[in-house]
Amino acid sequence: MKLPPGYHKLIIKVTDANGNTTTGNGWIFTHPPIDLIVQDITQNGNETTFNVQSKSISIPLKNITCYSFSPSGFADNKINPLRVEKSTGGLLVTLNSRIIQNRSLQFIAKNKMGAFSNPLNWHPENIVMDYNTKPDIKINKTAAGVVVQIETGNMGTAQPSLHLYTPQNLVAVALQQIQPYAFISAPLDVQIFNYVTKLYVSINNGTDYTYKYAFTPAIATPGEQTVVVSEDKMCSLRSVKSTFYGQSLIWIDAVENSTPPPHGGFLSNVYQLQPFDIALQDTIRIGIRYDENVSKLEKTSLYYYDQDDGWTFIPSKNSKKRQVLTGSIESFEAVCILQDNIPPKIESTFPADGGVYYFQDIKKLKAKVDDLLSGIIADESEMSMTLDGKRLLYAYQPVSQTISYDLTGHLSVGNHTMSVNVRDRSGNETTKTVNFHIK
Image 1: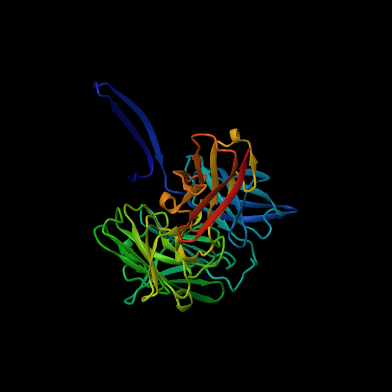
Image 2: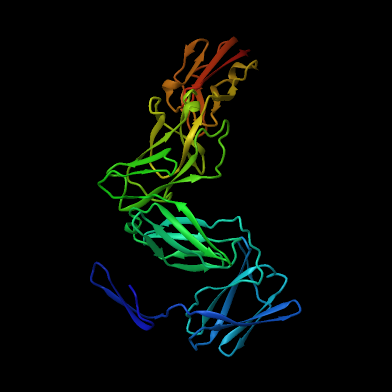
């Protein structure tokens, strides 16, 4: 709901199941954001004073907030002014010159009517530039539409322009500055990205530069299967008809820096399925192709990255003829191919190997197991625990990763042997034999 500027009376009526009604009255004041300007700047010793005025509205400014940003675009601090004084409807904002040296500033003010300003961004003269830096592009799917964000840290103060490229034409997209080095588009309808293959970002800091970014998304619609492929053609994503709740723009990003696995290395690029925060109602199927070197390796599989558990095994089908691994997951994650040929560990046992115990002290047999990558198969058919050659009906606790067996009586005096066998999801197997004595 959009309201015109001004005061609006609000009446709220609430009725319960018995018909009792109560009414609440109030007022809403709406006003578009005000625009600010820095009318002049004065320097006095270690103090710099900014004369901040409303650009067009005569309502006096009431208070102001200031933030500093590094040349690379990172927000440093919220700055507490040395003084804030009223000046012909505006504010004289005095800051410590040493704190704001080589820093860009952002001012946000509020006037006496309660209306806030658009951010006012200010840059110092002779700002440091890195001519090897490229704009950083982020694309986010929101409830309102697709938002493109461009960050130009270390690239000077010029405002970039954005165009969507299709084989037929270039579509200009307006950008709004939200921070000294950050610009965003308004939410865009997903259909505007139909047939888009590239994003063009142009910026002029004395010289015109245009940066081209390959971007080939797909529009996914409920009730239809959708396929999207990475730019290097090595990773694909396929949805089923029931994957999505609503229409969405989907794509695949190559990840430049990713958390390494606990052992081994990446056997493919790492791909981030986008948008990573979209909710799914069904699975998606992914596939990653591999080269001849990987085809010679055993125990390779797809993995996705979990923020809590790290790289996590995906049950995968290996088509060696097509040289592709395929699997299904339930959310958009970072995915890759890894090899796990390291067997799981049996970290500790009770009784311990070589231990000597009184018969009354042994009431339970236990083994603590772990696997750093693929994970232990939490299936009793893939584990075993024996005592003196007799298979036991043990219990497995997947959270603590403990295999245990409660004895029904005391063990006999003498030597005993316990054996524990576990397997991880890549098929690696470990067996540990424990010899102990009861007295």
